Image (cartoon, rainbow, N blue to C red; front, side, top):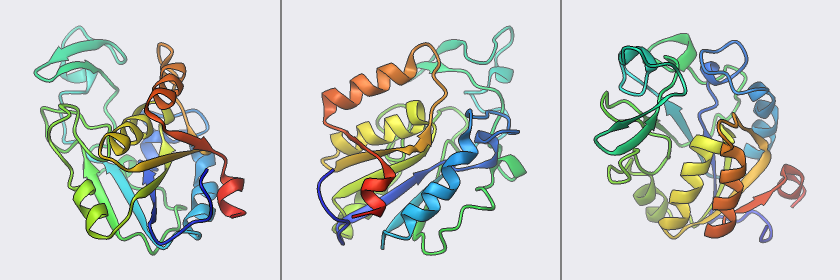
Length: 212
């Protein structure tokens, strides 16, 4: 895992929102279980960044925006393949809100992603065209933060893409697995593990962090 938490480390808590938890519009199985673990981890970090999925009505990634298409179908948009989802995390709705039991008062930044109607955004660093930046890289570099610990929802989508982009941007990436939950669509969890191995993304348990 690489030693104790230092001033160059940041916790990136991804999409811990109502719609991604049981009862939500795009529930990740047992997604709510990550909240107490994320809260405990956050107390170990001086630097915490949150992300929030934040879609307008009629977003291009919603199956409801495409006649005859169903959730989890894949279509091709201008930037390439795009999986279609149930309507979720619509701006201003209760489902889009961060979980009320997410207790990280010292989080310094919330990155809202997916707010452009024509492009989806999984990664905390880039939208799905892999070109449009969120500004996170610059924020981290200006503060001398070089190692990113990733937690949240879902392991095999937004956590995965964020970790991959973190490595491509030159950061060290550590995914805290028990503080994530996956959806596992079409073998996406296995694909995530293979990608992490190829890119040098480390996976660790929260006990290794909290006990450091």
